[in-house]
Length: 442
Image (cartoon, rainbow, N blue to C red):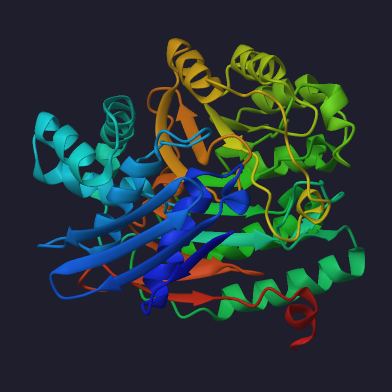
C-alpha cells in the first residue's frame, strides 16, 4: 500500500497518480510511505518501504514541485520490474499539449535535451512526439480564437460492449425519439457568437447510426441549418449492425465526408465474448461505404481485449491496413469505472512486450503517419492511444479537440462546450450525463 503524507492535496494526488501510471501492474502491492514537505525553495522527502529508506532535500529553484518530485521518483524507481517509462514523468491525458510548447520555442536538438532533462522523455519518444507535432503543424498555424467546431453526442448502441464505460443506452425507440426532440431544441436555441461556418462537425456516441435514419437525418438537417457546412463532417458508424445502405446514402447526400467503421478486433473469438456483433460482414460494409463515395474512412482497433494475444493484435492491425482506410486509430484497452470488465476485476496476463513499438513500426512502414495522441489511465498495455492517417487525411476535429486548439460547441448527453478566452484558456460547460433527466426536462 502506498501512503503519502502531504499537506498539499493536489501534489499528493499527482504523486499517487505517478505511481499508478508508472507501475500499473503492482502499485497496489507496493509497501511505501512517503512524507513530503514543500517549502519556498526546497522539498523534504522521506521514503520508507521494503528495501528502501531514503531522506532527501530537493532544490525547487524555478521549477514546479511536482516536476522535481517526479523526476527524483522516476530515477529512483525506473529499475523496478514492469516500470512504464513511457512519456517520462508526464501522466496527463494530453502530453503533446505541454511538449508542443517546447518544440515551438527551441530547436529540435535543444527540445530533445529539455524533454529528457525536465520530463525524462527519451529520444525515441521525443522523436515520435515531434513527428506528431509536425503532422499537426499546418492546422496549428491556422487555428485561432475565432475557429469553432461542433460536437453532437448520440448515447445509443445496439448493445453494450463489455469494455464500454460511456453513458450508452441500448436501443429504445421511445427514448430515441424523445432524446432527438430535446437535442433538436438545444441546437436550434443555441446562441451562436461566431460569424463563420464551423471548422468541423463531429457526431459521435455511442453509435449515432443506432438512433435510426429518420432521427439521425433530422439531427443533421438542424445542425446544417444552424451552423452551415464544414470542411470536415464526421459521423461515427462504428457498429456494422447499426448500418443500412439507406443510412449511408443519406449521410453522403447530406455532406458527411468522414465516417468511422470500427471492428475493434478481427479475431472472432475475441469479438464473440464482448457482447458485440461478429465482423464477418465487415468487408461488405467497408466496400459499400467506398462505393457510395466517402472521402475518409476511419477504423478503430482496441489492443489488449480479453483473450487476445500480441500476435492476434498485430494480425488485426495488418488486416486493417489491407483495407487501406484513410485513418486507423489504435487504442489501448482501459479498464474504466462503469465497464463490465472493470466491475468483474478483469486482469490481463498476456505478454504484450514491445507491442506498442511493433505496432508503430507496422503503421509507419505502411505509410500511415501519427497525427494525434492521447493517454488513458488504467490501461492494460500502455496508456497510449494513437490516431494514424494517410498523407493529407488527418482529422481536423481529433487534433483541435485533443490539443485544445479551438472552440468546441457540444450538444447532447455529457457533451462538453469549451470556449477560448483571449489568453487561450477555456471556459467549460459540461452537459448532464443522466439520460432520464435529459429526456424529461421539458
